Amino acid sequence: MTEESNPSEIFATRLAQARQIRELSQQDLARLSGLPASSISHFEKGSRRPSFDNLRRLANTLDVTTDFLIGRTEVFSAPAAAQTLHRNLDRLTSHDLKLADRFIKMLAEKDSPDEGGDGA
Image (cartoon, rainbow, N blue to C red):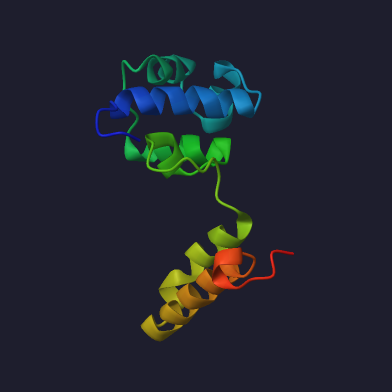
């Protein structure tokens, strides 16, 4: 997201994009999320913004992150492992969090030729 991007425009675009990727009509999304179809239309036109509760309902229905819908990330949906880790973060000690962070970095870099990985 660029500094000049209008958050309402980003949300409208991302909502429509996610809905289309999931092959849902506005009516389908409305029915599945429990929101009025007119709200979906207004959200996609950018003439209205969802409440936090409705943002969450839309993200859950479309199986995307709220960060994707509001333009904070380009990642369409979080991998299952990331969702599991996120759900359990509050049960980890600060030491465990540091260890998990180092482990994740190590895994991410293991195949990188710059980090001494074998690239295989």
